Image 1 (tube, rainbow, N blue to C red):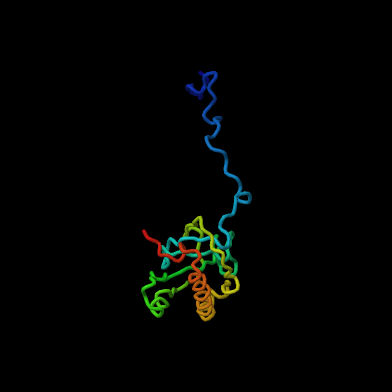
Image 2: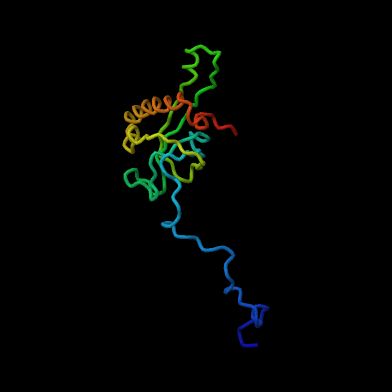
Length: 170
């Protein structure tokens, strides 16, 4: 035995030392190569905060954070539904159907860690109605919510994307 070196079963001929073993999984690719799947139009479920459990659509994403909003983490500007439309049947009067079809939208900048992407996409362009400036100014935000209410109402009445307009059951 050499002074200071212990003999183990790895030091036998034919056995490589433990630090030379190949890893069981391949190394992770750098972030620049990884596929970006959080794109505008992707439907997400909000996990934290006031709108937890609500569905939303990504309007604009900021992978490296937003310097104007003083956010140093990956985040996204999302538009979602705070209050979903209620169930409507043919037996109801037109007035009642109109009342039950109303919804309440929200606009928010959310950290990537605080929402879960789904497999669904929502093909509506909200870029004209919502920008980062609208989120900062309360008056602009209120006007944007009115616009969004009209846009989402048209989409709901057209009967498209039914899953997005239904309450998440869990």
